[in-house]
Amino acid sequence: MPFDNLWGFSASHPSAAAIVEADERTVSQADLLAGVNQLSRGLQSLGLKRGDSIAAMLPNSREAVEVYLAMQQVGLYLTPINYHLVGPEIAYILQDCEARVFIVHQRYLEVCRAAVEETGFPAEKVFIVGGSSDGFRRYDELKAGQSPLAPENRSLGAVMNYTSGTTGRPKGVRRGLPETSIEETDLGSALYAYGIARKDADNVHLLACPWYHTAPLVMATPSVHLGHTLVIMDRFDPLRALELIERYRVTITHLVPTQFVRLLALSEDERRRFDTSSLRHVIHGAAPCAPELKRRMIDWLGPVIDEYYNSTEGVGGTIIFADEWLRKPGSVGKARNDNRIVIMDDDGQILPAGQIGTVYSTGMNRGQFEYFKDPQKTAQSKRGEYRTVGDVGYLDEEGYLYLSDRKADMIISGGVNIYPAEIESVLITHPRVADVAVFGIPNSEWGEEVKAVVELLPGKQAEDDQVRAELFEFLQGRVARYKLPRSIDFMTALPRDPNGKLYKRHLRDPYWVGQQHAI
View 1: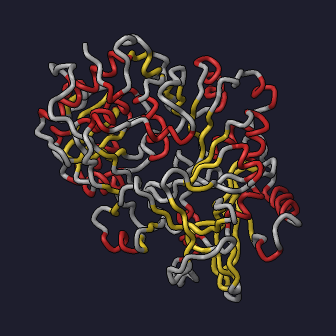
View 2: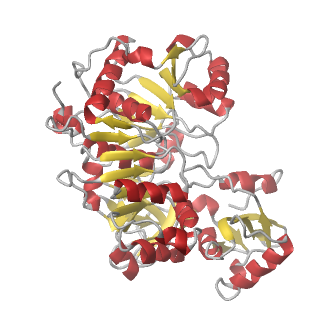
View 3: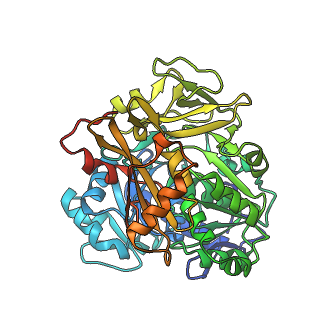
């Protein structure tokens, strides 16, 4: 069977492992390519054409990779749906993205059935992975009887991810489909900025975050295009991650700071039990990382921790490597390739180094996006050629970016700006703390006051009053007095999505019911 350079598969290595599934079954490059081509043809047989949309609600799996790769060669938009959502939330995205096909794993069948019934989505266009259900079709039907050869009239597709919905309902981030031909496009290029090249054939990529989020998707799939083996975790477990790194000699993975916390919560004996020397790139972003947390990761794994600043919208484009970060602790890096970062004030004036303002970026290869069906929100993100997602920060004299917080999360107490990320980065280093959120709540005198909500590490619980006193004492001298929380509460688990993004509004909004927010 002929192999296609689009996927980076070598005709001389058809039996090489393309994927190691969560149960450790291996999928060869030949089998993966055949499945992708059959799925591509199956989607075309349903009448889908360039620019149409499909949606998928799948765990990290072979099928998720197949759906992504098939979309990429038949010119479709793919919306991956967060499998933690409930029926009405799924229904909203399914309808909003204008999906014509919905691919669902059996484990999410009931919640998806509710969404399908709410929207009136045609049951014959719902395909179930790993099982069957009355009224719906099996995923295998899409591939059955289809040729394993590449489809005709191929054209590039695109992913339309939905924002996390930190304010209001989530919005689809949409770009025009690429006009370049498949033969002229290098779909592995997203990794080149990290020094990862096609010629490094021994690379092994561990997918440890949910594929439906932008960052894991744009990190893992280029590895597949480059012919690297992709080792899949269905759900993250720190000991299991270390076991897989050692067993498969993993060289690349993408993690988020909450996973750093879970890894570092292991005893030193547990961590040292595994050989992690194969790691070359532990890439992180998606959420702020406390400097002390990152320093501990570098001390443990060595100078392999690469950080980026980017967003679903493509705002950002910075990278910082470990050696740079040790000189610039707290920075998220400087703009790479053709990207440009500027800081603007509220009037749209570009600010000099050292002054805090809103972070904007632009770049020739960062396609212009729109918030799907929301021209007002799209317009609000623009200033000329620059775009923003509302992050606040500053550039130093060398062009390194430091983030303060999201503008929407900033606390204004007595007319003074307080950035929750500063306080969170201190609290997360306390030995009892697994996760923390800081936000503003109403105060009749000052407008807002600082509140913290803390999730404790397993086995580190104690009486709330005792831990609260420890945390208040810990903050003394580490945070300016005006930034100190006036109250600290505890939760079993903070409302984060699996990619590490915190739904802070779920914590903050109840305090503001019936009140006018100060921001």
